[in-house]
Image (cartoon, rainbow, N blue to C red; front, side, top):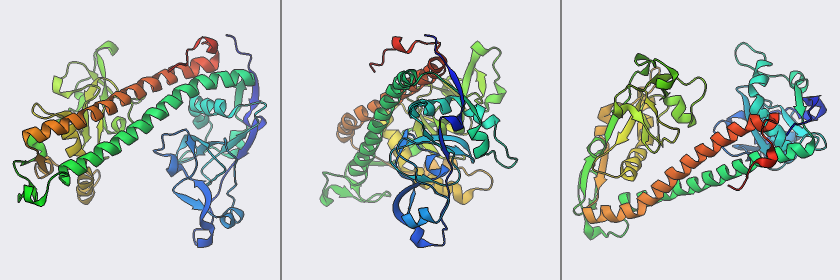
Length: 407
């Protein structure tokens, strides 16, 4: 398919809107029913649509500030600190001054197409920004950026393919959010609150009252917390010989990017990470997650958690249970980068149910954990498919009519 592009300035395809912040000293400007979005609200936001942020403003706050009400389907883009968080307004809302948002003229530019155009062209936008302390793109510069558009029908067809993939991703993420809540609730009910046990069934222990025949151990007693390596000491000889290096940044964002380091594949097996492995970042940004970003090498600031005696759900749940406590320890001891020590793992007590109870709990937890992991892997595949199709569809290299959207 050969797309017939026409060239415009962004100012020609819709209305560019900035935002504002009502005075924080006037309570009457806040806690109303108007959604008010800041870059912070989008920093870890995973959905495409957004309806409200952490705080709302009132009509009085809107009318006494430079904040503006934008309609449903406005494309929101952060214009500083940082540039490039993107979402679509699910309803009428407002933003602070850290946005340049576009109300598309639907006769010229479909809002979904512009959303994906931004996704594809963030580097172009950043390259046209200014600032020494932090980059910012001004309203005037943004309005004058050049954009090439196919016909409105072609825009709708292209964005429909990408949207179908993103909707599937959103469904899987919602399922995983519910699965995570279910796992956490069941863990609390069965391994902490001892559902189905009466007081007469409990005995004293260093953990507190626990069911008879249960044992008390610690995190290092149920799993191996394997440190990674300083992978810069293992440079690859060729690109074919290389693994991506899993560091704190990659674990936090859930994927590798162009800045991710490489290491040789000739590293010891225990420092190689595979899809489905439980990873614990013990330094800097402390978090526990199931890695699904592909085979890679493990950085020294991460643990790969494994066990030859217990199922993955068991040591994942217990490690995650202590995460908030570890975060507090790391903050308390932080100088430049907070972290915990192996002794904190040894001091973290774990309850091991009797054999029959453990077996029954595994029947409950294991399918939930495996379903969660399977969905995470599927999400990564769909994201990769979308990111591969995005530039090819929008350039006309792939004929949109030949794409099967039955996901």
